[in-house]
Image (cartoon, rainbow, N blue to C red; front, side):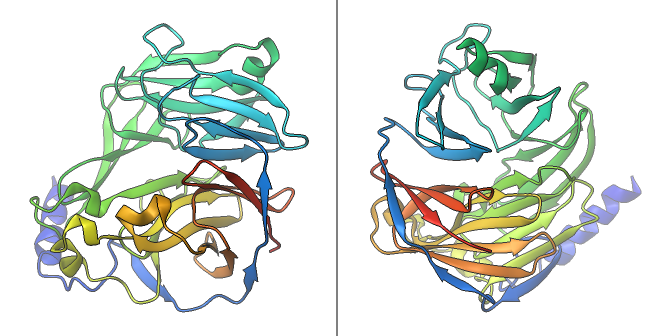
Length: 339
């Protein structure tokens, strides 16, 4: 009960807050420049993957994700020779089928098998996709499938706990729950914006550290990266250049929203953020370069990598020092980088 009253007091206090600040509750550091700037050369990859929406590289595997489920949700290729290795997760209502798939690079190795957490909000189920066994036998293998009661975005904290990103008008709402019982352990809410404000304004992607209870969140329409743990004992933000005024942005038409950090990729050491800085409605077909901003998990700026193309999704192969980028016309490129 005491926690609840402190929470209400916090909301009353923040209701009078200046809008020219960070969107999170933690301290904000403004980044004005990076110690290193690299200009990457582009190399086109000769793969035609129809309906591709996102990318992920794990070791020597390139995952092409297709949100539509056309010809399955995932196609997998070898980064060594671009050999096609298979397609997995069929669209449907069967035991190993899904109507929609959400994933957040939440993978790990279990008994020498590469596994990936995925969710289906439409069918309300969550699954552990066994990539190694699926590739071995040539069909989808899920180690476990269980029901979920919410269509929120799920992020694994440990074997029993999950972080949920809830969609509440005018708010950023994160909830920590027991995955097996659905019991809410903690909930965090930040609100500066009236409920009448369009939902997309506070959109934030979330990606989990591969080994630790740490998360990075990219604010799509604010020039900010948030870093936090599930208990919020770690909680800080980074703004590239002075923070965008929240209240002023809230009164803009959606057609004037600027897309800043459109997506994240993380490793055990670094956070890679795709900085677009273009109007949202021009995002997928705009011309000109984009940038990858690299930070460490303590918030220090490491490098800015200038990408000569308007890529809309990307992934990082740290082992071989490549960034893979996807353009709006589904063309795939890669870019050599060094840190």
